[in-house]
Length: 179
View 1 (cartoon, one colour):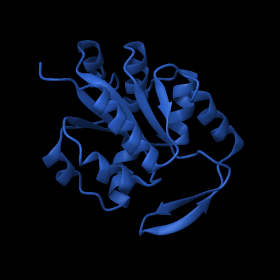
View 2: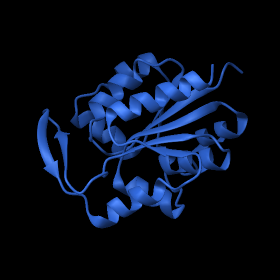
View 3: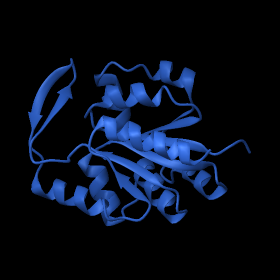
View 4: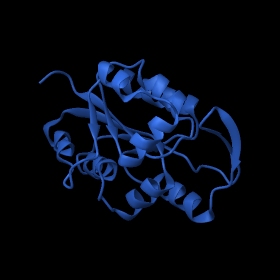
């Protein structure tokens, strides 16, 4: 096997998704995992899945058992990045629910002690985000969503970042630590 790779998961959040993807596409040795909602959101933001597939392997949420997650047991991945991540996915991860491709990735990464870097879309009581069409909008996460974000921060092998700059820094630090 070649050197371990980075697994990057996108869920149904549009929270700075264009910036997250632009950064991801600058990296080498990345596999992209898309939830069903993540695939829909990419279309809403005008991201061509065909263009992404030209640069890296793309795994889509099409099987009940999420077979690609078994790669964690083979040492195929050194890190999981979930960016951006919906409050739904964060809540499921906090509760230990692994019923989708992305929640299964997080579960298996943790079981294999593979570090995860997570960028939740709900990180503050008031936030600005970008809607499709590059329109800036204010959002007001619910207390339960903020509670789940705070809870996942306590999980082993999980680093939570609060903006794209922190995401970039965390990923680059992780990659530097592997060399």
